[in-house]
Amino acid sequence: EVQLVQSGTEVKKPGESLRISCETSGYTFNTYWINWVRQRPGKGLEWMGRIYPGDSDSTYSPSFQGRVTFSVDKSVTTAYLQWSSLEPSDTAMYFCAKRGHDSRYTMDVWGQGTTVTVSS
Amino acid sequence: QSALTQPPSASGSPGQSVTISCTGTTSDIGGYNYVSWYQQYPGKAPRLMIFDVTKRPSGVPDRFSGSKSGNTASLTVSGLQAEDEADYYCTSYAGTNNFAVFGGGTKLTVL
Image (cartoon, rainbow over all chains, first blue to last red; front, side, top):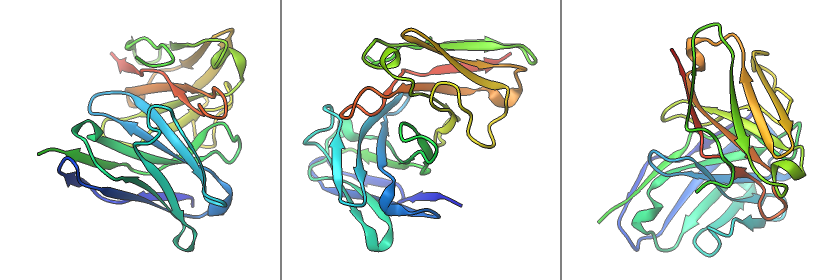
């Protein structure tokens, strides 16, 4: 069974750094893009970008370029989303989602989400 | 403002059919046959319901169907059931650097 399990809730102060994780299992990690999606409270879904675990090639949505960094650790089949300096506007739930098996243009399995709250 | 336009709400009675629209441009929906639809319950992760405009993943009831005409995609839910009450999001491929543009979401209410 394909599974993406994300790290737990985070409460941070503005200016702090943060890294959240997405641990995968049940498929060949190296060959499927991992996408990151943001959902602010009461709002819709926003695609942040994606990373190819095989070579760490990353694509960032223009809205998120320079604000976040994607990375992977192939030894533990885990993807990461990182901030160097959080802002209150980063308060949201963040989802990782695997590229589709039957179509490369969809996201077929999602993590359960990680809630990030940034407040002074 | 979302890249794709969805109605904020839709509703229907049990057993009825309801269609949710998703309007984009020639740069996304109109330019590719890569529209997906996701179902999301409050506080939960989205679930893939339709991909590549019309295809259903294994396990998705055949009550859910997708279509596209020009720059507008549609999700139809037939034989509405109480469990279909959720938020639905459309998304389209829009090029290498814009892998997924989302609609604003539609809250489906089963009356």
